[in-house]
Image (cartoon, rainbow, N blue to C red; front, side, top):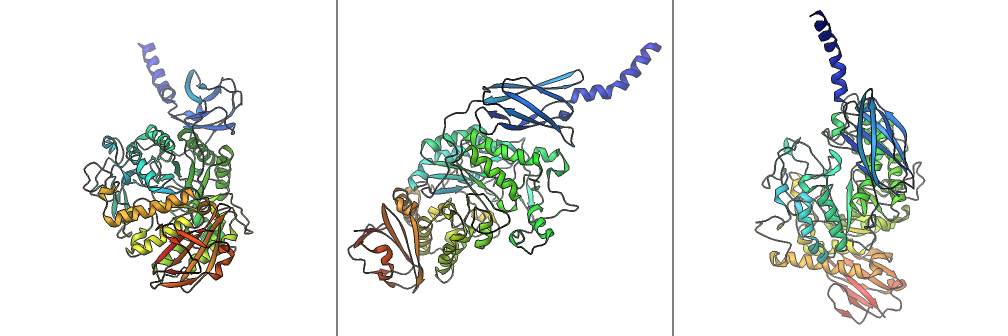
Length: 620
């Protein structure tokens, strides 16, 4: 009896250790896999699970070397530095972790690279279509909601809830985009956003927009998951469309799995008390700015429920860079749009851009830096200004040009600001790689901004599709979708009519559109098609002339041809003598109006009706 009692005491004393040993586990590995034959031979595998950081790791696989197993503050994490030799073959790498008598083995896959197109990039020859998958089309109602997700809601009657649009629905509309003249599709983020409803301004809202990641290596189930995204990219490529992925490096959702169990305190930009970003770009380029103002802009959180990642932490940087490469290789996307670019640590951004461009030399990268002047915009791209920091970003979303185009139409019809914006292109190394736009998911819709004025609408689209840069158009602009961000941005993110079974109207078809909507669609289609098939318009040089008498004239030209764009934003007709344009018009005696098909047998003078843009293909 005494021996039994002593044995029980000993057993009770050992139970915590036994229980601790039993709970050690490996639950996640990120990246989830890698490939042989990549230019980047080094990979850092994040290993996560209870006690994962307490294991002693080893790998026995030809061509794969475990250089170092790094431990951090949280014992549930280990970061394994691997080198993958050029001689390594595809297969399942067994990662072994030992602790005492316990041995854990986890398979990590090395795959063969396929020959599918990826990282093709976008150029001025492309026309990008921006859509929010949740608001575009619903191809699979079975994935509208899931009871086990933090937000199980689905209600199209509520503008702040998820509406059920998905990748299957978008795939069914590829032919529609092709017919419109689109060559590339950009979706707001498709990565998992397993966030609960958040209180924003007193209203509970879903993260249908996609900007609060909760698991980088999973596409949201409500959009169809990883397989649906791969299928969409394959189908788009087969149809001749490229795919732009929307990336977010600055922040994640506050229910992201690694936020729930932080690897280390420095994983995030932490403050003694909650500190929001100022949303002000000036302290970054201001040579007189204070340190605290710069820090607040960069390290302040975007909103309280989007924790700010510390990209100066090497583990965070590796995680984000590897995920970017993994996404391109795994899904086959062609270009990379980066959210909130100006709030990221810029040396990190250079490292990430360089890693992507090294692996995929043709990929295009363009970020969102919402600024209102040329100097600040130049800071975030390859530029010709003597900044202390030199960005290597190839392109950017051209917010300065957007403001200039919209302002020229919204107010007095004066194109001077547009001229001035382009006149400062010398500060950029290659402004032809900028992505131009008239509105987006965060701005008032363009047709509403110009007062539902169809003439101004056509002029804006003409500027967009004929000036320098890579044009992008927000979904629904081609059918005159409108609204202001009043009372919220949900008003500019309404469902595309016809994207859901049972919709009363189907704007994806000519029969479902009104006469004005068809006129708008056909206008965009005609100009986009002409742009795509005429190199002078999409890749030629740009020469512009000072606005005079309310007119603004510019030319796109190369060895294949010359296109003249003459615009009259004012509300009065204007006679336009052409003698001052002789530098570009010499040798041409006639022209064809691209938009109407009309032939002009004399170019001595043109008459421009009020609020009209004329696109002329000059002929000898």
